[in-house]
Length: 306
Image (cartoon, rainbow, N blue to C red; front, side):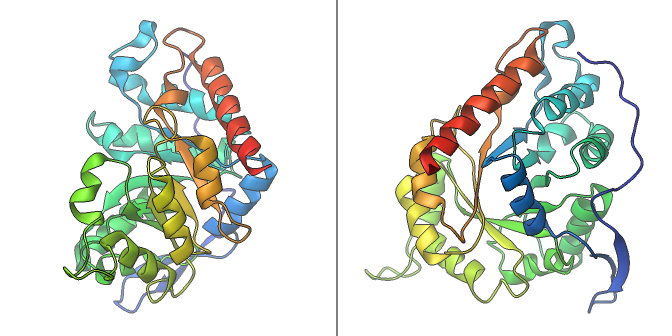
């Protein structure tokens, strides 16, 4: 495990100015690269559709530090350093930090990524879903405390649960649409009315995100790689939105099918792999093994779009 890294205090990717939201809340305003700008740049610069998910589970760390939650930052920073030139995004999952009282390590990791991978956007996987002043606080957490470039959200309380995040101009928000878990069918694959021809719930989410909810062009959708036909359906309903696609790798999603179903000239995709990269080795070579796994996944994705 690499030694302690010197913290970096600069914020080279963005300059923040204060702007007053309609609610009276003072928010930071992005005055240079937006999330979508960063995504396009990283996709081109690194020739990559791959996002590495940062889901640190100490019981799966290298043997020398296995079970040591205070090493979460060191483990994740080593993965970032090993893969920063291979990815179009990083996606830390907030629960894996909060469960170990490691939010301070997540703050350090976000700072590390800003300084050592400034061209790679960071999507905070939080899946928040609340309304009013509570949603404003969650938005502040994602964008001010952690400095994320985008966040994942649950849209099922409606637009007012999303709007506070969109007040952070230039930031991105990915709405859960058709997720990769089997239980997603319980709601997402149900019709809005028990009449044939009515849209399924996930189809309605896609339409809202492509249309009336996306006033400033900040929205994207989360669609699981385990459902390639439904990726294609979402893409038809939301032709220009970025799709965040988990499920390739340990969950069994097929890279080639995912790219064919979701990638379009004006419709980007971000294909996430977490466990297959993070835990490619349980030895001291874990970072090198993670790099090799990321290279292989990137190559498979690129072969499908060739």
